[in-house]
Amino acid sequence: MQSKPKHLALLTVCIMLATIMQALDTTIANVALPYMQGSLSATADQINWVLTSYIVAAAIATPVTGFLEARLGRKRLFLIAVAGFTAASVLCGIAVSLPEMVAFRLVQGLFGASLVPLSQAVLLDSYPKEKHGSAMAMWGMGVMVGPILGPTLGGWLTEAYNWRWVFYINVPIGIVTFLGLSAYLSETKTSRTGFDWFGFAMLSIAIGSLQMMLDRGEQLDWFSATEIWIEAVLAALAFYLFLVQTFTIKIAEGKQPFIDPSIFKDRNFTIGLCFIFVVGIILLASLALITPYLQNLMGYPVVTAGLVLAPRGMGTMVAMMIVGRLINRVDPRILLASGLLMTAAVLWEMTGFTPDVSEWTLIRTGILQGMGLGFMFVPLSTITFATLPGSLRTQGTALYSLVRNLGSSIGISLVIFLLTRNTQLVHAELAGQVTPFNDALAALAPGRIWDMATTLGKAALNAEVTKQAAVVAYANDFKLMMVVALVALPLIFLLKRAKARPGEAAILE
Image 1: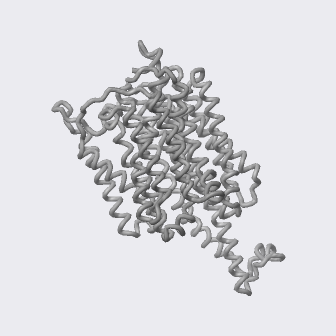
Image 2: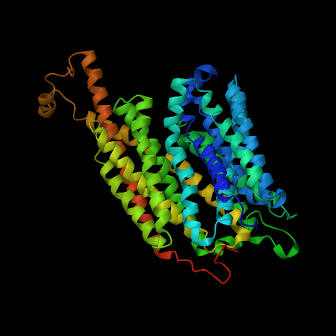
Image 3: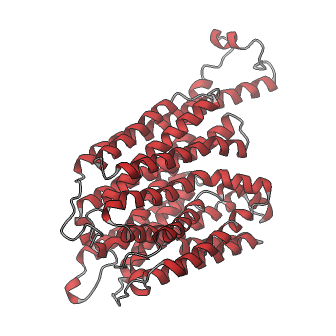
């Protein structure tokens, strides 16, 4: 384990820059896709590979962080990751064809995968245990605010400059981070541990197939497509073989499983993984819903929608600063429960949203939802790793990031699928009531262009029915996420508050 760094504040700044840089790239490119599509001569279906390639590569490379740290050393691995990520960002910015962009995004995802778990591990090892809450508050700002502010920053860069600046923005951040880590981060000891190639291959195939299924499912109408069936079967079979390999490999014979099964004996860590899965669903799935809600139903331009969503990130930052000060005075489980209940309450209010909702209501609910996520994330990060041995910390942070990302992918895929399906179902039900003999409809018609005797009137009426069906479908999705938050609440009673063991006044073992 590394010693306490001399320039802790400067090291923390560099760690935060690395975290923000990687977290931003999970969402910053989304708003630039239509512009990339024209420049790279890609179809709407093909351009989505720009997002899919990055997500799949990052998911596959995240679990291997612990092994690479043991073999290369934490500092060397961190510097390689930052340099590779920055170089790949430049290559993405200068790409002139879709195959080039997809290849460079794969490289970017591979190098960026270890940035977040390494950042969390460094902060946990650098700060004394009594300041772990404050450290996780700072780290959480980067992890959670990055994806929230990504669309806003991406929209502004695309409008003001060019979509290529979505990637070029990483260059100055990467250079400063690399120089800072070179100067202030201490190296850790290396070890020539064995590597479970079969376990790694099976987990990689399982994660990659699952991510492909989730990202491509909506475009291919899910299980009506052969590709989705193949990816689902591959994911299930590979994960089963991975579990068999992990829990049957004989460590006594000198073999080392890819993921040490003993890590799951820590109750707080295992329950923490369940919780961060839920947080992952709520964090990005709700963002994936509210952004098209503002643009498609309320007619907001991209930049305006980003500005309306920005206060959500401010709410998260404020909550994390508050929790950072309370974490050592208040039971983290109470803070976690407060965050869950606040998030559920806001999602319940969002079920009543209509296209006429005021900007103030959008901003207020955004701030409160951001605060709810902030109240969850910091105590959860603190209590999850409070009792985990230091030797398993990097592997634990990698799994933590992986499960959060899987939660986000599954959550986004689920809510978009339900949104599409429910919009169609509600549209069919509402359309069944649209007849010339409906008195309620006739009362609304004067002054509008809903004249069913004309083609224009029929089209306008159909557009309005589709809009109202979408409002109902969005409300159902918000209600589903509220239920997910409430269902996770009983897990808090399974967490135990960590007590310092002898010799842990300064740092964890």
